[in-house]
Length: 137
Picture 1 (spheres, helix red, strand yellow):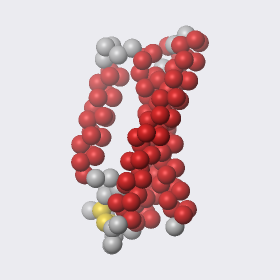
Picture 2: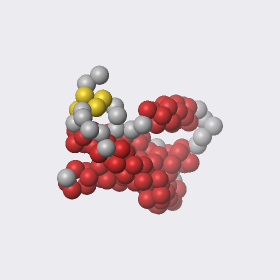
Picture 3: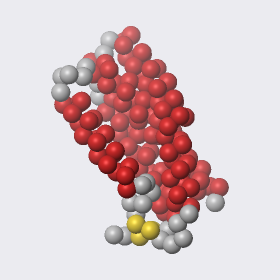
Picture 4: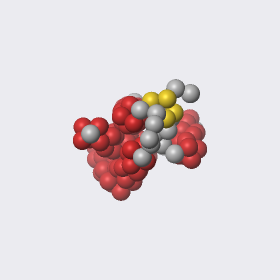
């Protein structure tokens, strides 16, 4: 496995969180045409409010914990060490759940749209914790 220093690890984490956040919001935007204008406005506002709450109460704290753990590393570490290995199990579960929900008709797009906007916006905004950590160093 390739090894990197702390700054690179923090940057990689920030870029991945930003990219995944933007990707989720882009997926949600592909469903906009399926919603009436009223539902679309509600989905966007609801998603942004949900994302703000998820970012503030969840992902920002997780990013801070990841940054603290990374800062305690004394040498170069594996490129994937920006999160605990246990987190990768949760990530695989979330990806699988997302694929399942998108590919089945059990979950209408008017419910998925604000959820994807919310999680995407939360990841995107929380990713700036990593960039701020780099600037502060």
